[in-house]
Length: 145
Image (tube, rainbow, N blue to C red; front, side, top):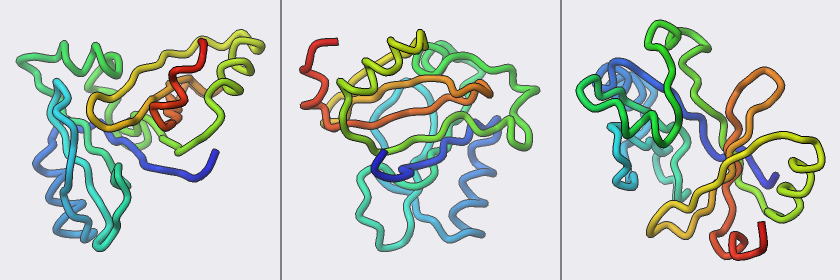
């Protein structure tokens, strides 16, 4: 683990959440890949980080399949308080090592590469069921799984 990268918050009211984080807390909306679900990536003013510090994940009630396919489904009734935290993300290195440790511990995980970002993600649940996202340079993903 190199550092905490971002926190992702799943929200049934993307507009209200965006106003809070931008207008009240002073974050700014920035680059976000074209995922198949609504959302916003928020950055600190002057921050040059590639991935922002807060990711807001919106819910498209008319087309929920994009979000469900990418991050799984969560009942909207659970998206209150700490239940709205979708996942914590860390920048990391040593993808082959974490794969081996997870397999050795019998912990299931999934992986994907974000198109056009040079970013490879590994997702695993912690003992409390919170999703942990580990972000690696995509070049590390060419190692054998």
